Length: 468
Image 1: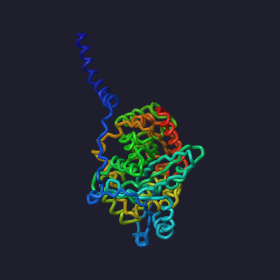
Image 2: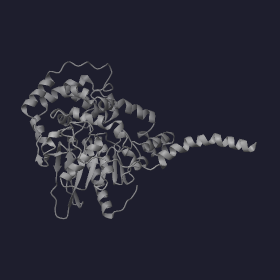
Image 3: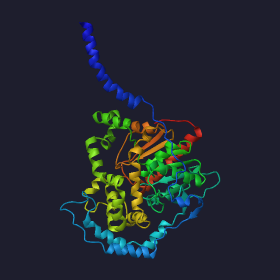
Image 4: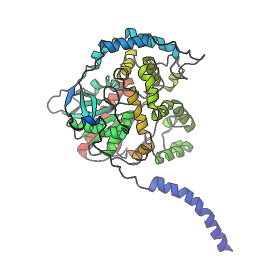
């Protein structure tokens, strides 16, 4: 009888243990998936250009021509009357329509197009054809004294930003200092489909594919090894660069580090019961309570579902209406800078940005008519094919440095980041700043980039891997 009871207990316990241990094995003990193959020469432009490829690097100037300016001003002045906001509502329902007229009047009457054109052209700019697409980029090379090495840094923006986000930071990053034996040359491309870079003519140009385009751009410029910085889409593209090309990326700095894997999610769930297991107490409110965090994300991510499924539909409206484009994009600059700005009648848009800065960024979408092609990146990247690559489950040996703004949309502690970035060299935690960090706090952003670059270079010289 005792043997029967023992057997019964085993039969009862075995399934329970299996339920617990099998997921643990598959999540934590199973090795990473293999690195997927990716075509390094996939053609994204018109087939007619493929036979005779142009590899030249051509000077480029931003130009707002008079005809385009007149058309834009006419559209701004002829906008229809907008539906008034609900009583007592600020930016909770999106851009407060009661604030639109002042912005449209400023854009039409006070924004100095020709002066801003000169502002855009203060840095050398170029175009070159990569995989069938003309890629626009800024390139600033500092003049250095003997003994100072110039090293290349690829700066990558996201949506709804542009290269304009980096204009205040570029002089700070490229400045020559007697305290450093290196100076930084920046290459700042408009992502394919953004700004003055061509969009793909066929489906499939996802974040990993753009990483290949960016790598090939750096090769075109003569850089077989380089450093990378990215936020927003620049972060996903930078992560893909570090994953596919670890011997070429010498160091990776990001202001939006995120690991989207089963392991990361499970650790976050465990931490919701015992936060101190995974996150420092003074940072726990950036992650928990999970219900509140995910409620905020769901509230803010409606645009992403639209752009990941029907980007061309909303693209029609935003391409045709500068008022619509302004409302759609500036609402993100309000709430992604501080979530509580949704409670401000004016969205606190000028809390850290000037009207000229924000309209400059709008011009990077309006002038080249790139809003639709920019939004397609969501549809190309957020789908089963790209998720199936499981890139976030493949660790990269590239040295990484992370800066985390207090009001960024999401936060993960080092124990989670190390799942993807085991060679994490440092984390800078800010008590200020939001999603558009380089644009909002260029000094703090630039100082952190320079600090990370110094660490990367020292590590490379010592050829020693260290941990936090």
